[in-house]
Length: 256
Image 1 (tube, rainbow, N blue to C red):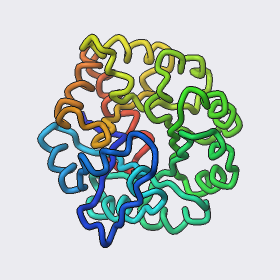
Image 2 (image 1 turned 90 degrees about the vertical axis):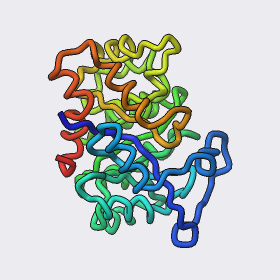
Image 3 (image 1 turned 45 degrees about the vertical axis):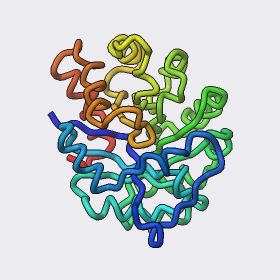
């Protein structure tokens, strides 16, 4: 089976070509403490048995300057997809032409970006996949936006940091979930029940694994991949294949 990591972040060593624009909020220390280049990520994936990955624009490191994530994807187009973050949806045409396959709403500080109609319309026109980073406080706003755009799939980063309550939104057929360490790390060393609960609510065809590496860097990349395998170990082979790659490949057909 192909294994796809749907949520990775990369940072270039070349700060002249790709200058950092580190955000001023907690949690961005990884940009300095544990940056990983696309070449390093590709090598670590090979050791861990991960075949493909989606590069998600590192808001904490680059803001809305998508230069590195687009160039990194272009360097290995058969291995990586790319998700960008924009201030102006008019930028998406050129970014899509350069290889970006998705756009991310970064709504950690509020639900506002979820209601930028022009971005939804442009994503639909260009066939871009939409993802969102938000927190539990703004899940009602996200649900409202998802319901208003039933023909656009939205992949929610980290299950909205609300794995216990995200099931309240399972009725939204176009809401997909990225199941990351924030969801699987339940403290008892057994990630299986957390995944099984989400599978009962959403179905495995709407769940996909993401490592959040290297923002999540408290363990080697291989251990993050092993955690994903452990989470679905109690499922059938076909169900494991769906979680570890099938859902991702349906959203990112260019990675097939």
